Every structure is written in structure tokens, then in C-alpha cells.
Image: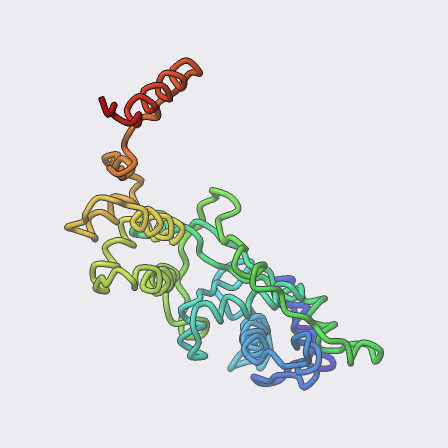
Length: 301
């Protein structure tokens, strides 16, 4: 808006406000700048980016009495927007894998950056809570590309790159848990992250046939740490002793308790269970002489 200074306390929000977006829109050029190597549009990545941009756009606050206009950010945290995979999956009806791939595509483009933090909640420390930083300079280039760049295609990362990118907290810094209102998001950080971890754990433990209640107990024992759940499943698969209580064993695993298993000796084949006889030249000569004496024809006398 010409003549109006959109000034908030957040630098990223201020820069996005200068781009003059209106409504919940997807710029047409994104269908050319956010595509795969074969020219196909990544619609999920585009829609996720549009949602992220919406939350980073400044919100107009008009004074009812004076008519003065001020601007503020929509999200509650001071620096970045808090998001989780479960909300993305619910909004766009996709799997966790698809949501994660789409975010990594955006991160590969450089338009967003994921941050994973440990926050303090009423239930204790909650690790790997995802925050998304929007990079205004890259967003501008994707939205207003130079004429020579409009035909350029963006390639997807390979499957190996996507699934080997480890999501862990970069530092042990503990942040204060925040709660968003209906003007921002409708769920607390704690609830959203817990649901996200449970959803991922449901996929991990699906082959074991556990109930959702049992999986929730395992996730809670892990401290809502998906990496511990993944390691526990690997330990369970390698466990050789018959298991009577799978839930209890997995809870021990996520807590870092790994009981020692009895060593199972390799199976022996009784057919080959004999020691090899070593023959010297003298023994061979003696055996030949013995065989000749046995095979000698009896005398006719």
C-alpha cells in the first residue's frame, strides 16, 4: 500500500509486508519456479509455502476510534513460525513422508529453513519441535524472477538425500512453550508436537501390531523423542529371545535399558562332526601293506 509504512517488531515480517501480497494467494510464477527436474509442478510444496507466507505476512490492526493503522505478526513466537508434520498432513491429507519431502524441497531451494529445538512444557522437556524460518530474499526471487530465469527448472533432492537428513536439536537450549490463539494457530506447541511424534510412531511400530494406547505409552516413555522410538524398533527386530510383553520391552528400549540376551551357539551338523586324521608317509606305507595282505589270494595248498 503506497504511503503506509508496514513496520512491526519482526524484521522478516517487515520485509514480507513490502511485497504487497493480498489474500491467501499462490503467485502464478511459482508453478514455473517450484518444479521438478522433469518439469512437473510440486503442488504440495507450493501450497505449504503459501501457508508459511500467509503466517509471515503482517496483520493490519486498525484503531476503532482514531482510524490509525498498525501492523503486527500473526504467530506467537518471537522469531520463527512453529509448525509440525501432523498439522501439515491433516491440512493437505498427505502422509508424514510426503510432508517431509515437500519441506525439504523448499529447504533445498533455500526459501525456508527448519530449526529443531527442545522446549520446556508442563510434561517436561519436549525435543525436536520444528520451527520454520522464511528467507525473504529467496522468496522474492521465486516470486519475481528475472526474465532469463523464468524457464529454469528446479530439481528435487534424491531419495537418499531426503531420507538421510537427520532431524535433531542443534543445541540443548530450552525455550519457553508458547500457546497460539485463533488469530495464529489453534493448538498448543506441546499437543501438536506430541501428536506428530505419535503419528510417526504409529508407522514405525505398525508391523508389531500394537494398539494406539500402547504406542502412546511407548512415545511418552521416550520423552516424545522419535529417534529413541526408531532405535527401540531396531533393537526389537534384533531381539532373539521370545517376547511375551512387546509394549513393556519397547518401553525399556526407549528408556535406554537393553537387557542382555543369552548367546545362541551356531547350529552343528552331526554328519560333519568329526576330526580330520593326519597321515604321515610311514602310515600310508603301512596301510598299503595291510591292504595288500588282506587282498592276497589264499593258498591252494
